[in-house]
Each structure stands twice: as C-alpha cells, then as structure tokens.
Image 1 (cartoon, rainbow, N blue to C red):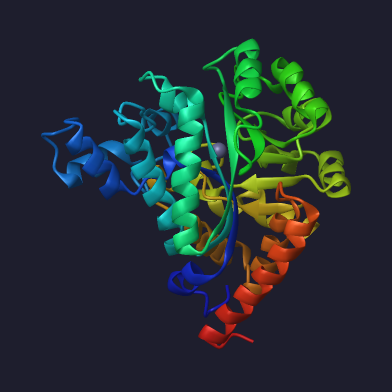
Image 2: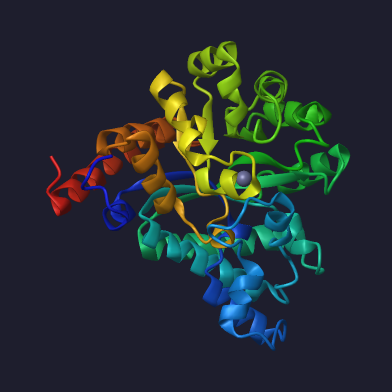
Length: 351
Ligand SMILES: [Zn+2]
C-alpha cells in the first residue's frame, strides 16, 4: 500500500460519487435533532440513538439488521426533509466529494405522510442544490424506483409522474430486493425510459444475485451502469461485454461487507475487475447507516488492492466518463477535476 495514503489524506482527495442514497446519508446529529423535535425516540441519549440507527461498524454481516436501519417516520413536514437533505449534501465536503449523482426514492418520503410526490422531489433538489452551491460541489440526482415496494405498473406510473419534473434529475435507478424481484419483471418500465430518451439508467444487480441478472439489466433493461455487480467476477464473457460497452460497476466495499453480500473485503472483486480493465468505481451506498463513508472505502482499496493516487485518479475519470450528463458538461468537469487533483497533490507534496 502507498505508505503516504492515510485516511486523513484520502479524505481530501477529490471524488466522483455515483452511488449514494440520500436516505442513508443523514448526519446522525441532525437526524437526532429532527427525532427530538418531532418527539420520536425522546427518551434516548445520542449514544443510544446512534446504536439504534447505525449498523455496528465492525459488526458481523447481517442483511436484515442492515435493512432494519432504514426508517421513514422522521419527516413530519417538508421542511424536515429539506433540513436533512441540506445537511447531508453540505456534509459531502467532509468526504472530499467533487461531483455526485445523489439518488433518492420519492416514495420513501411520501409513504408515511401525505406530502405530494412532486413537492418531495422539488424540496429535496432545492435543498441539495443550495448546499452544493455553498460547498462548491457539482450535483445531479437519480430517482430510485424500489422493486418489492411497488409492482411494475406502479413504478411506471411513478416514472411518468416524476420525469421532467426538474432539470437536475439525470437518471433513474432500480433498487430493492433483487432476489425476489428479478430485473426481467421491470422490462416494460425501462423500455419506456429508453424510448422516451430523456434519461440513462442504473440497476442494482449481481449484488446477491448471479451474473444472469447483470446480463438481463444491460441487455433488456438497457442499464448504462450497474449497482454493485460483484457477481460479474464469475463470468468472463460478461467482463468483456462490460469493457466493450463501457458499462460501469458502482461498487461499495463496506456496504457489501455489512449486508453479507461479500464478507471478506480483502478478496472483494473490485481490485481484480479494475486491473482487468472493467470500468469500476467506488461508491459509499449508505454512509450514515454504515458509520463509514466513501473515504473509508478508498482507504480499504489502498490497503487491500494497492491503489495509489494514479489509480484513484484513473478510477474517478472512468466514473466521470460514466456520469449521466451531457458530453460538454463532462469535458468541463474533467478539466475542473484534474485541476482539483493537482491542487490536492500540491497540498500534500505528491508528485
Ligand atoms: Zn445502493
């Protein structure tokens, strides 16, 4: 491992983040503040609240425990959603985020309340954009469609309702239970998205499912990126196809450990796929629930896969290439990104 790559240095390294869920990104102290204000969990100290709402950082992998940490009873008004979004985005600066495609599922916020879907979308984007401007971060949004919570017909309805509601939305994501709701169930939704031609898509696949689901996602759901895609390590034809079509895998080391989808991080496919030339980039997934952010995963990549600064720069350029923005914006961001990297190197005397 590069001796000089301490967590403190990596924290300041400029990062392109393509896989982070807003619902798993709230700074815990801000969430506690909302819980107290709304008279939830009132009897808990902050330390007890932390234990109740975070996965134990080095705890044994436990998928159901991980899922149990996602709750949606916090929001009693749109201003609660605005407050949590604003602080989540402001907090990205502490993780060295340069550009992010932040994803959220509007239904998560409307489910326990009677907020309208479009007011949730606009509230989140307004708060996120305000914080990103203050923190000097480039931001776009992905709308997550959750299989398992809604049938394909409802997801199509959500897509049609939300599409074109804000120009900062750049794509759609399919998340949720991939074992019981395989991608082929959602062909019609993703066919519609492709035919409309407004958005690119990413699909959670191959995290706990075989490579056939990744094939399905890229061939029949037309996914341009894949969430996790760890099982691609089992299929060399798939690896060649991902390279040929430049389909990037958004991989999340700590998340995969905690959910039990890949328990031994030192043998995680990420390092091998990168060395084979498969487009991969690290994402944080749900940093506040995991009690670990993107910087922590960068540190794991340096420790286990000998990533040096050149590798991290290359990985981030690959991520930028796979971003869901127009070619002109990518060229502009690439110039700005390389400038941020050179400032970072000067700061730490890295040649
Ligand atoms: Zn995810």
